[in-house]
Length: 263
Image (cartoon, rainbow, N blue to C red; front, side, top):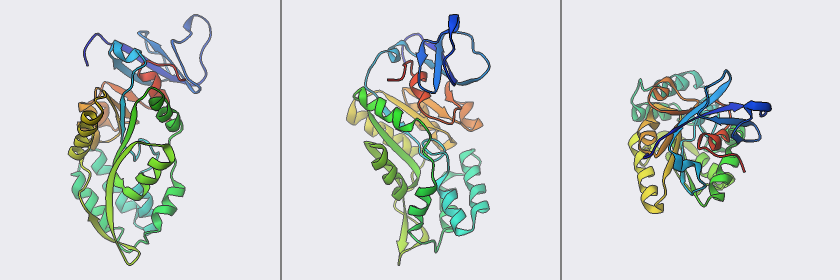
């Protein structure tokens, strides 16, 4: 981004009183601009001054361990009785220690024979991060749009998009035969490159600047291409690569990281 930047620091909890009163306020967080960081900070951001204005933008978010607290494939694997094996493969991929496509194919094979109805059962177990709906509604209130792009699975991502009133989504399809997963991936795998292409396409379609959220190594291209990339509970490889991060268990402080008070 162009222009000089401001250091934003966001804290969780009720707002302080007195001379340290914050410039930014939310229901569960507060923030300061260009002040020394204090203990208890949950996020930092370097932003250009234009982000201090109310302007529409495109928010693109990863799903697993970003919008959601969990990894969907790990929850499916637990139902299939192969949780430990799949969780290990997931962690290796997210840390950048294994090719994501190879990891996804290996994990999908472990789900062979799992009833397709498992997607509904898993959705009931999943936890959307607190503040996600507030963030989505705020983006929409500015005239912006929201997209989800995931190396997870379409049945879950499509349902989340409907529930949260998301404008765009892209995920992976698993092959189903006779009501059960075959262990094969159907169609293209959503890789780091795919996420970048999704962001680029929507940026061109909307003409809007982009804020991207992600937690894993396969989000790095997307985070780097965005006007503002924010690591959410980020893996070490991501924390080392982005200037903006949030370590809270909720997503509404993203509003503060962009220089705004919550509506």
